[in-house]
Amino acid sequence: MTDYPTIEVFSYLDDAPSQAIELRRRTAKENAPERAFGQRLLRTSICYADMKELEQAKTKKKLVRFAERFSGELYFGECLTINTAEKESLDIKSDVTQSIACFRNSIITAMHLFMALKSSSDSFYSVSGEGEGDYNFPTYINTYFDQFGNECFKAELVLPISGLVYREYLRFGCQRANSHEIGCTKCDVQFHEHTKEWVLTIATGEYRYIPEEIKECYARLLDVLSEVHMNDISTTTEFGIPRQKTNSIVSSLWYCMTASFRSGRIAICQAPKCGLPFIAQNERGEPRLYCCSACSKRAYRDRKL
Image 1: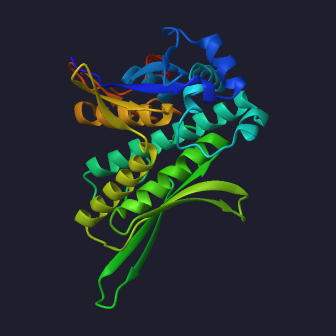
Image 2: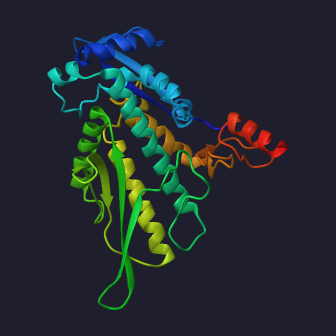
Image 3: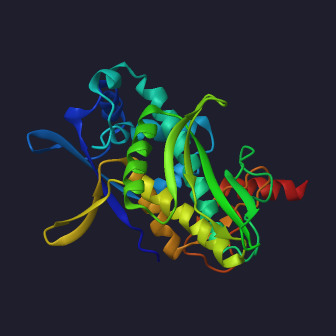
């Protein structure tokens, strides 16, 4: 059996918007808040099962249910620069749902990037099948020849961003990632005048058009995307035992996803009109073909027709 990693989210309730606290109170199943530094502190343990639940939230109803469950944790990060007045004026329920839906898309993109690393192809990765909701792998490749006649390329990952709090979380993550200067890769959150939307962009440096450097490019994109999403994770000890903690549901779920890459097999769901990447754990016998039981049943019905 796989030992699934867990991580704790530390939420200081006194700093949260009143709407988020009310939503949290209605959906919370954890223990009552404890006191820390004169404030109410809520600990929430996040594991792979929670990430799996978000991954399978294919409908708006499931997304809303998941968003309400973790509405508080999404707003408690120390990195957030939103002032109290803006927090109180937000439609928390709507913004949480937008943020979670956008974050889920980022998780799917990360899984595709990991599949690109594991792919045996010598060319650029492309999403096969119909894809979930007409999903497009958001990587743009610019190829050219350098002064020595070698074919080279630069890649840019572009992810649309919705949800004020998720956008501010990513902005802070980009600042930290850029300060580390990961190779020549740069990331930023910016507003596109042409499309009238906020986007997260990750641009790489120059690579040669050979299989080894194509893989290295995808590894760099995945590493920077992960660093942006895990910008507030820290390690501490409790009774001498090391534990990871964070202030945001975003970084905790991302941590669980990347940790599952070590022990699981990533694949694409073969059900019609799905194409969702999924992580198969504890496989026995034949490899899994479908991301969930619903897709398996739908594929079975289609075969019977």
